[in-house]
Length: 279
Image (cartoon, rainbow, N blue to C red; front, side):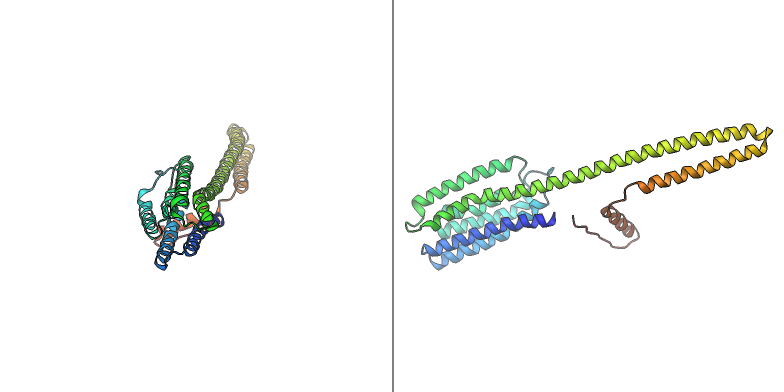
């Protein structure tokens, strides 16, 4: 799971970095002054840095939590907004200016089904801004570089949601496997409980009959009565051994639970302890 997440994380960050390199190359090729190119590059680096905590927060998101975690998303959103303003002022290209804020909005912890609608809206918005730039803002001799830049920028939200969707699918499958394992453990516990009930019930009936017979023979045949008491004691031992055998056949406790129990015992003894198990 950890490797899958970092693959997803790396994919999104890679596309963001490539977009920043794209617009830097386009600005240099279009003859923008060095100050504008430098400002756009710095804004891109800050935007990349702001994307990282939003992705990490997405990994820790809870399906039952509020759809948008305002407190966690507030700072990255402000940073993305500032980057958009700097890019708009430095380049005058609408599609470049809008991408950081749009990407930050896409990365928010939206509820099920809402993210897709958000991506559709912002993709249409970026496409419209791209068309406006192509008509009024992009230099006439921009060539294919600006076309690729606009296409890349407009498709970034879709690429992001596909990567996050892949992570959600993997996470859902992992949760399903965990639920299946818990169900199997519950079924096994029920089976063992049934076996213990049958075993103990059988032995208790035998012991009851042996003790009743010993009671009846106590006055007429003490030796036979004593033999029945010994037999009852032997039945008790057999019941204990049968219970132990059933317990040994029961599935072992997972390592994660064993470590958690060990940590609890150490903490109860006043020892600072912590255990981390990679999924």
